[in-house]
Amino acid sequence: MKINENFLLRDVAGQKVVLPVGEAAEKFNGMIRLNDTGIYLWTLLEKDTDEDALLTAMLNDYDIDEETARADIHRFVEALRKAGILDE
Image 1 (cartoon, rainbow, N blue to C red):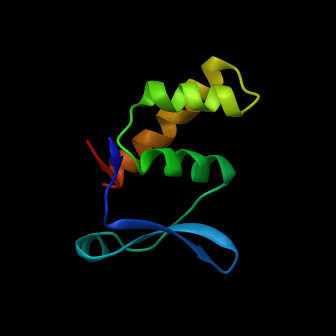
Image 2: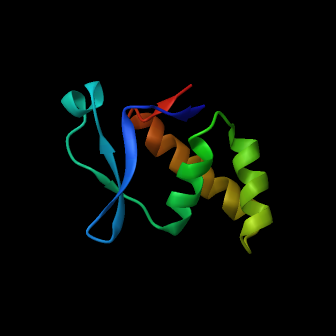
Image 3: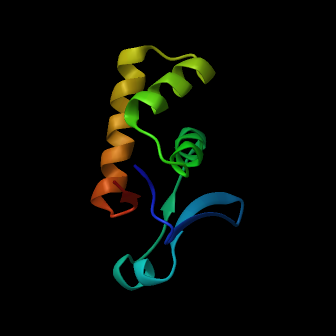
């Protein structure tokens, strides 16, 4: 899975937000603001990856237990899927 090319992470007024472009802008109204962890996961998802790779990276780079990290990653990925932001 990876981020659909019609969604871009941009800095708007000091906040990192996801904006739709191209065809996605016709279907997706608005923007999504990301926190630091969301930005971290987004950058990993810019390349083809899976939830296990995201988990490994997060456990290496954050002081977090595996159960919490796995749940947070799954929730983030599912939100992106529902919004049509991920290519499977």
